Length: 328
Ligand code: AHG
Ligand code: MN
Ligand code: MN
Ligand code: MN
Image (cartoon, rainbow, N blue to C red; front, top):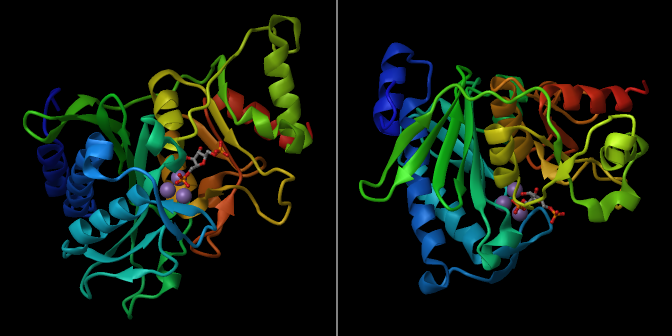
């Protein structure tokens, strides 16, 4: 479709050709994110900066915007008749929506919470599943592998507010036009270059990493004098949305690996709200996404707030890191 097509028109046309696509739900999510974007832009002027003084099920202190974004998504998407229920990083339990709905929405309402107060890019991440059972909605309905997602995406609230989504037919990008309050198509069928000279990891955790991650990063740092024979650059925004957005735009590899800080935790990031939706996008753009050894999208979902180790981005780099984890 031509540049500048509105997201609503784009998705409506897609939905009319393929009724399996959660068209109205995608439009509801986009509309919710427009409302979140308004709050984000206003910042202190809207009184949304700072801690809410509460904690979430992840053991994190909630920021005001974590809660505001969660409420906006619940309200805007709850009206959608195709939606059976929602699950969120900020809610311990599932949130039923409509009895006749056949889709499930999972989200990280506000990703990159530590960046809210310092005016750095943040985002919303979402994943859509089909409700497989016919009975009353339970948490079990949500426990599906990443491969079963029917759509996923994110909105990054940065210098521009940009929505990126996939329904398994490529990755497409839309930027919010403030004049018309519409997301307009800027790029279709995004692909990630298989090779890169850029990696993203929180280097302050180096002493806690496992050997394969240490080996990979050491080799990047050695530059032209090391095994890789090229110089690498590093970026770490501390908002997964913004780091993944950069990778979709110019390649790279993103890692939030398991580390020894808390050996009982399988990682920091959440499988259902962060890793699965981002993995779907990355794979659709020709990249790869693993937990170290295995493809994230095939991991069984055992619980709603499950955590996972994440390595994703340019395919040849991710394959190399996976090889190191497999002991070769
Ligand atoms: P959230 O704000 O949704 O809890 O997620 C934050 C995540 C992710 O966006 C980012 O990559 C990572 O946490 C940053 O962690 P560090 O502060 O440990 O670098
Ligand atoms: Mn959080
Ligand atoms: Mn997050
Ligand atoms: Mn969050």
